[in-house]
Image (tube, rainbow, N blue to C red; front, side, top):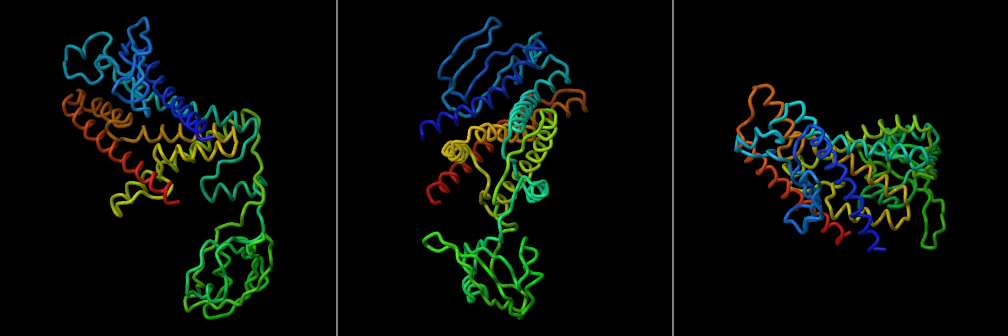
Length: 377
């Protein structure tokens, strides 16, 4: 199973990277730019697989994450080379913008194509936030179970003293059924005793109903954490006609894009303020672990859904205005259009090199964090 998971992991990454680089490649060829190398993986080069009739070498590189398309005159400081007919730098700003963003565009196309197919044949919804969950509850896609799971109980707090335990399921307070965490504070007044009814699962897997008398502290709190919503009793597949599936895929893609940007902002904030990687951020090792979990579940649609999510995340990350990424290079082209001359090649190269080094360091940090999480979880 582990070996198969590794194959699936490399399949997912290879498809996402190849479609991204093929976007750059196809756009460059369309504008007459000579592509010198199409590489899968990061150098050093392991092997040249073949060279096509136009002189592009298709190579396999030793570091198996990433890929690249190397175009003539793309980063050259020699003005003579940059002015040759097949040079990237000799093309118009609009043509160069298209070539730079073509990889991101193809990642969006791949993700929306996969999601459209999945939501056409039927698959579980992608739930990124509470709003999405509430929408699917209203639509009947999600059937809720009874009660709110107890996620944590603070030792020494009112709930702990009363006997409430992590893993219990809160059914009602003072006879009123509980369907959301917001209702608990409204029903629990300061210094007043409330009657809590819960389900508890014993060691034999049998459920028993228990009642507690809980007295909140002066602030009206009982020092326990509850799930925002009840557990899901059933999650039905979303199955739509193709045209509706396409529109729904666009909507979901927008939500994933927002979540990706939010996650990146959270990563930078936590690194700067707390020198730590936040939960939910994963690098290659973490993604490999997630892939293994999906493979173990035997969910084929889950594999392609995961590929769509990764493709969208890669597209969003690449389009951010960070030097060394496509978004950063696009910003340089915008500046060139404004000042009506190219930025000094040595400046651009040094900025990209420094940014690339920082990105590699960030990936190394996230990868180390993934490894620590796997061995300590």
